[in-house]
Amino acid sequence: MKCNKQINPFVQASSQSTPPKGEQGGGCGVYILGIESSCDDTSAAVLRDGFLLSNVTASQAVHEAYGGVVPELASRAHQQNIVPVVDAALKQAGIEREQLSAIAFTRGPGLMGSLLVGVSFAKGLAASLGIPMIDVNHLHGHVLAHFIKEQGARGEGQETKCEEQGAECKEQGAECKEQGAECKEQGAECKEQGARSKEQENTKGFKQSSCPLPLAPCPSFPFLCLLVSGGNSQIVLVKSYKEMEIIGQTIDDAAGEAIDKCSKVMGLGYPGGPIIDKLARQGNPDAFSFAKPNIAGYDYSFSGLKTSFLYSLRDWLKEDPDFIEHHKEDLAASLEKTIVDILMKKLRLAAKDLKIKQVAVAGGVSANTGLRNAFHDYAKRYGWQIFIPRFSYTTDNAAMIAIAGYFKYLDHDFCPMSAPAYSRVSTEA
Ligand code: KG4
Image 1 (tube, rainbow, N blue to C red):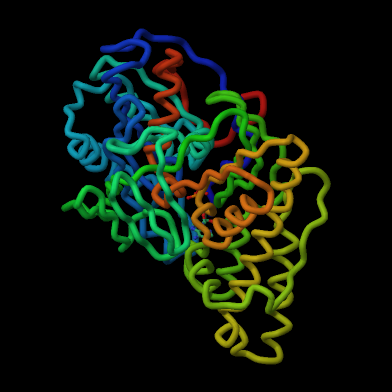
Image 2: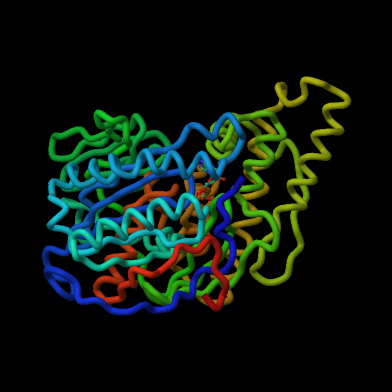
């Protein structure tokens, strides 16, 4: 089962304003605790004045056996994880909970049972500390992840060279080399000021992002963001931190959903995205061709591709029962290429029509190597300035909720204790 985050989420009702405890209106010493629990990741993060101090995530392996997220199991796991995850985030940030200025939490969209755990926890903690709560739309969080700053990172405009694909990232004399991606975690070596930093595991086994290297410079408004995840494929025109307009979206399946389903048809594991990505690196993207949709405007459709993949595979398997085993790399590479082509074609159309050169990508599928490569390719071809999130900010994480909450904090845009979680949002919500 997918988290249902598909309907236009980008209009939020402004809630009541409660005076914040501690510093008002931003500036120095605003500590925001972010809590994310919309699907199958329990995550907590602390920001100080928009700078990341900690980002701790407990993922739920329990769903792998079912080939998708089982909502009931997800909410139970959130209940087990929420206290230790928040505790670890505060400890890693080096602050006491009494120092918090506000608590930002994912109010929706997502799985209701999962959301309720985070929302209830945020309410209880905020009430006990006497600090305001900030409700965050999960999808706003994904888009605003591009604005997370890191301690010790360079300011905007400072000379930093950071090229993906085997290139070197240099900052203040430091060097970071990695295969095929920007400075990231997972076995990569990040050296800065003589120190080595990796994705670390704390004693409880939660992932903590602590690579001190900087994010790419922030986009400026207006920019376009391709938001691609298990439940969404949208082109968002981002006019400000609050004003986001969906100008195109899938009329059926999301890109991540299509990848996951095709992966399932091939008998590969769940989630399919990372598996397909890995296999695709060794395959020929032109080996097979699958149906591409013909949809007007900036909208997407992936259900035809999914069906075409399924039927083609069925025919090939009749001739060779081991077809998948013999061709899995080529199948993955061709599927990935088809999806990336579909996504990029509409994005390019929107960028051209709107004359926007700043283009970002966000959501779980933005971890995909082929998609990242396509962004670099389009940047060269069309003069785009591109914004690609670090891997730790592609999938669900609380740092993005905390940064979205930080911007609302600066506007004194708080939510009342009575605010319920929502699993879906309509354009009017
Ligand atoms: O944003 P996200 O973490 O969660 C929700 O949709 O709630 O996105 C998850 C999606 C899944 O469909 C997963 O297969 C896909 O992101 N994904 C990838 C990659 N990593 C995750 N898809 C393609 N390539 C990847 N490397």
